[in-house]
Image 1: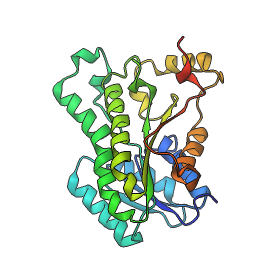
Image 2: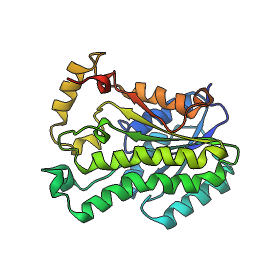
Image 3: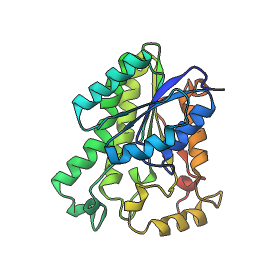
Image 4: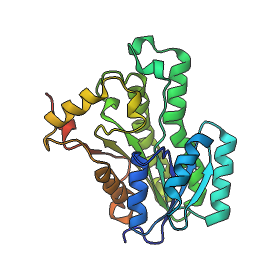
Length: 254
């Protein structure tokens, strides 16, 4: 029970194939209570079905691009629990047209949208979470290798993830004196709702399985376990880092 007595917010669960859901499940198995936010009523229905059987869970709507909704969401958390111990940031979005064709053709508005929702939301949530982590805590974001290498059809999301990883380091420095750790997991490709918007994703999975040292694709449960490690006290000496959970794919040159 590595997370017994801990409470945290998980942002970005879409369905049962979400990486955020895999992390949340593992946290609950290890004794944590989880709150979940959803961006829209449509996505909220999926999250409600998933969380019905989770003991002590909270559920509320919160669009991370709306400052008022973020404030209301954390006010709800404070009134319900008084404090939180961890935060999982699993939010990323870019308009579909920005994930097609060439990166050089990205429009200003699509770039702004991708960076706002996928990157700026992390410091926004961290700022809101800090007062509820008076005794310290752990913040975890999700990245991908497209942050540092060119991945077909990833385009502006690669830039957004690079900015997310940089934001993680700056936040780790800002929040470290408050005993709040901030880290990223860079997962191998997994068939999620978000991945469905990336052209040629099946080919990426095939290549990963062939080239990764472990000769297998990344499993949701593997990322969930790594998430628990970084969120619980076992990872208490780690902050500002990107942990690759990709079967070793990231070490390969060819």
